[in-house]
Length: 216
Image 1 (tube, rainbow, N blue to C red):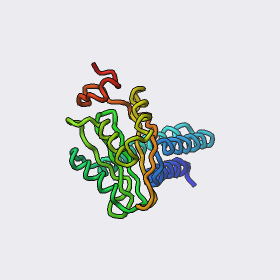
Image 2 (image 1 turned 90 degrees about the vertical axis):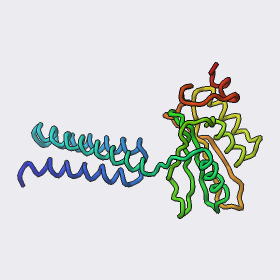
Image 3 (image 1 turned 90 degrees about the horizontal axis):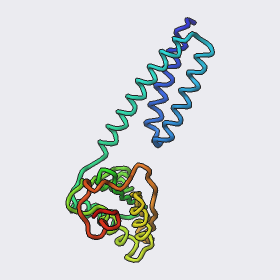
Image 4 (image 1 turned 120 degrees about the horizontal axis):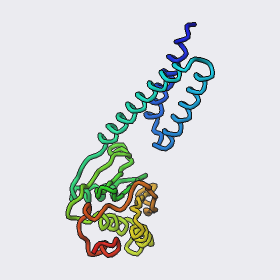
């Protein structure tokens, strides 16, 4: 067997691994960890059994495959996002509230000021599809709090917890769900490290949240 077969097989293994990890539904952190582990093991094995050019060649191929996978994942994510206005956003929430279970609805204000809605776990509305309400005249934090009141009740403690996190600069992800239409909705706040409160220039004035967020 010629020597060049080893780096060729190693490169093919890594390229295939990138594809399997990307299409397997692994989260970003898990995908990065798995591929870092596979790259480290593969390159170490090549360095221990062959010349240095094996490692360099396979590392370059792996880098190209990593960039390609990242771009493909970004395109796939963008294809699942639909931009809506405030009226369409409220219609989508009403559809989610009246749909038979099991049902999951997630709402979060992103650092860009957009409001992201992930909903619908049935066949007609596949879970994971996202709808983005772009920044406009409606306060996105008020819209999130409206969903807390709508799904969980006007006195739910999640409302106070949400505002506490906002005051600390963290835009938490509201997740409400139920197993069937006969059961009540339950909710919780999920932490998203990369979801910070948007800068004042990226959100409209709001008499309720401006004092909370320190806007004069």
